[in-house]
Image (cartoon, rainbow, N blue to C red):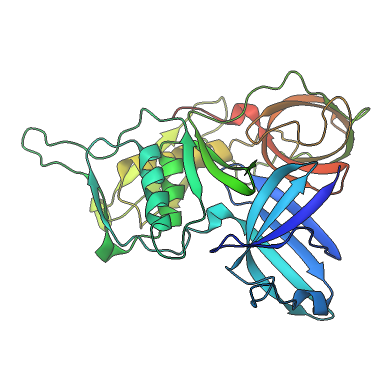
Length: 362
């Protein structure tokens, strides 16, 4: 594969360098419902280069890096760290979805029965409506059947879903909370759109990805390394109690349990910043899923192969992993791709979770 790194000014969209050369790099890595990341090093003189507009080529929160592989944009990232470390200049960049994090909502938004996916679109629109803020991100994909904000009922007032400027909620945190509450998946997608790059946040409900019977992952073909299989009872639980906002017996709470043939093991999770019953239930559900202690192959390193060319999978896909492991013998399990990283031109590292650990659609 042919790699190319392109630098662009984040605000003016001026192209700064159409073929950036790094001494070394790690990534880019991609995460389901998470922020992509990238790291690179340069010689100090290259790291301090000045672009054609008179500003630093690698300017924190001022430079976009696009990763192009075989003519396709694999990732678009914002330089968030650029400085001298020892004898090298280090660059760190994060996907465009990092941008809303740390930015306060300064509007006034109140809705009854609103889809959380539409709220995410509103929040991205709000972020990009400010001066020097338009990254060109659009929100697309599925709607959800979930509704936020309850209408007035007998003897009860309406309880709208609300965002208020005087509470200054962190927009990035609110997007993450909405995704967990529904729940829905999301990913960043980037493509060439004429002479510029188009950016999309795509929402998938109840999930993104699909079962990939067309791809094969086996240790006698394209798997070249396997992470240690995991199954631990230390954190196992089959009942979760979440204690939310409030004091004493007035605290909000939610619980989730499953009878699975094992002794009852209960864990308490505190979320004192959360009053929403739906969000507390989502926390309980996710915590219970994470504590089931299923045998998992957490990572595999794969090489370019006709059975599964690099990048032929997508975040959220279910892939069948067939390996032989010491002391465990033959393992044949479906796993979900939750993150992956380009390691070299011909190898990739996939982070996996058991497919049957997911419950879709809330």
